[in-house]
Length: 433
Image 1 (cartoon, rainbow, N blue to C red):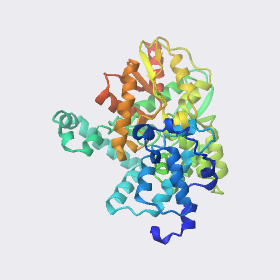
Image 2: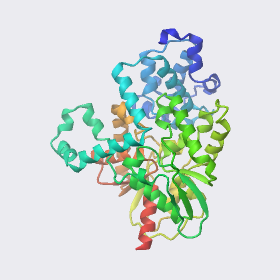
Image 3: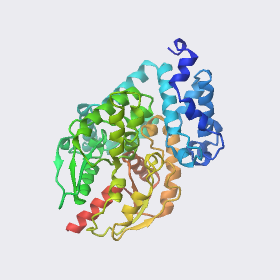
Image 4: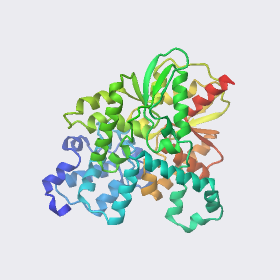
């Protein structure tokens, strides 16, 4: 397949030339890159990867080494925050992966695994079935038994991956899709809530907490019935056409509703949802709609911090630290909003986390496909978490929650891991007691 594509076509599939030209190879990104900090290898830094992208754009072949270095990138976009030249590295690595996906032949087994995994994200029925099976595995005590007897060590890498598997959270949130929830008190906002894909099964209680907190703040909350997966994992994995199809579906499901804002509680999803305008910029039918949709997108912490927050909260007497979700801090440039919300909770003592905006190693499915590097980054992150001496580790992304929960099991001291919205929901609940 790769041999049939001319060098000029190969370059056209990859990162755009004006993006490549922005990088002046100054190296200010190096310390912001988790893989470079861990390995100290130039080719596993943003600058080194951009250099490799330039070589491929100039006609160099896509080698296994190139695929490995691009694949080892977390796409955390920490380098974008550090870059003085405005390099759009996140877009570049996505384009590079799309180019690799189009030209590198995968074995039959890996093709089937990817087809199954990325296809499942698009199907409520498949996700529900997976959630039921996961629930039975846990409810039957098989999960606890397997861990207690040490079987995970015998499974090698599969055992490591099991540590990162989410728990089923029945009843699943799919049952709420299509409903509208009234505000508590005067209606001040009409919002749509995008519930995600896996979150409906693994984070149903988080989604419910998000709706309750929005209601407490005068929001009429609609869960659009035709919504689906946002496509973030697809675009990060080099499958932009799949992501575009999912983007069109969400735009059609939401845009005609006349909402004041479209809300997500998943930072990784939000970054892609806010970039639908770029994703569909070449689609004459959807380009304008995608820009309008993206202009309405807000992370739930961003939205709540921008309105007059309902102050009627009970005390949460706990010490809390906050881990920045990469795609919130670096992708969306939302840093102060989560901290502002935590500061508004009575009784809460906030402790800043050293290196809070360094990636925890979750990065979508990175912790599954690059488990060794992910585990190393998580261990470093947990050293900072333990040093903070906080009872609660807050974050703003379900994927980060899963990773940090695994970190607490492996390296922690009994900390709770919570979404910022869950802490607000707890405070509002205590005010009603």
